[in-house]
Image (cartoon, rainbow, N blue to C red; front, side, top):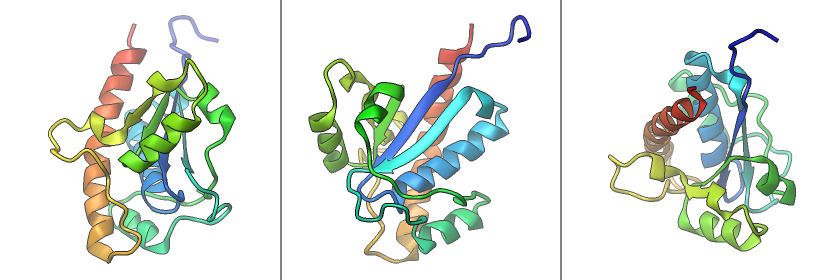
Length: 166
């Protein structure tokens, strides 16, 4: 190991209902931005869903297409449910909406609730607190979700960069 190199890893888990639209989009966007900043080796980034009904499935094709139009890849991401272990290993557990937040808080073991936040808490310039679920809407909904996720991802990355700086 090189002297002076920071090897701390910060772990981030993005959570939505089924882990096929919002949270995998956030994972892909955040992974892209972290790589662009040269921080991918310092971050563990993942996503999960409150429910397991899409377990093993790739992200919704509409989410994949919207992400690809902006240069983000969701390839390799597969839906999975939140597990007990997630609460123990992740530094940030970020809910897309208040329903996800309630689920996480009610299932979180003692001593780990401070890790759980709404993702848009990292986007103070946005007046909304929730990333809306685009599943039952059209293409514009997925574009709107990307707009919100990009802003919150930049805010989160700034906080993590401060956390990692000496």
